[in-house]
Image (tube, rainbow, N blue to C red; front, side, top):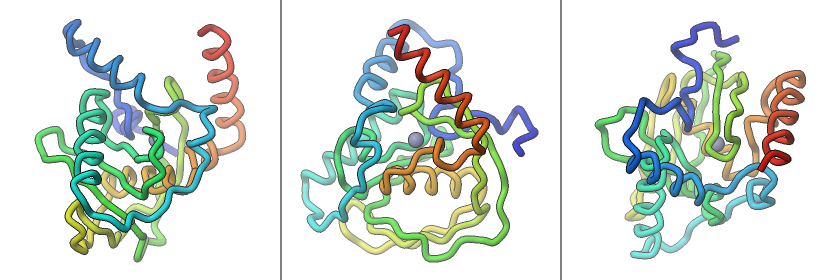
Length: 194
Ligand code: ZN
């Protein structure tokens, strides 16, 4: 299980540092564009992209901006209501946004680890999820070129988390039953309070 507090809450929605009102407003606006738990689109399976045109590149740019504004480190197209097999992520604050189109896991390590994950679509929820530590992913970039990504640790985890979204799978589907029940209760209370 995740035992280091430092590693917790890393996926998609790390706790934001203290921010100025303008940044906070931009974050709230970005989060408002992200589909939340209960929206049926989050359970849908996204379709492969077959047109690598300006529209796709604009979609990827929008997703990158939204992810950054929301202080996320990953975002899947299904989370903004687009059923395309597209995801963006950025695990290093200073690096450019990575985009994977039609990603497929070519290989994953037998070695796995548990870590606490959060999700922009599940505000306030953090649950433990076990995933392979290393993955090799085949995908296309925004221009349609084949790319091969070898990822480990947090990067591998984010990619797998976002690829789950493309198949309609949420962290609630992957966490132990007791944590799932606890998270469902928190989500229910939130929606009643809203
Ligand atoms: Zn997520």
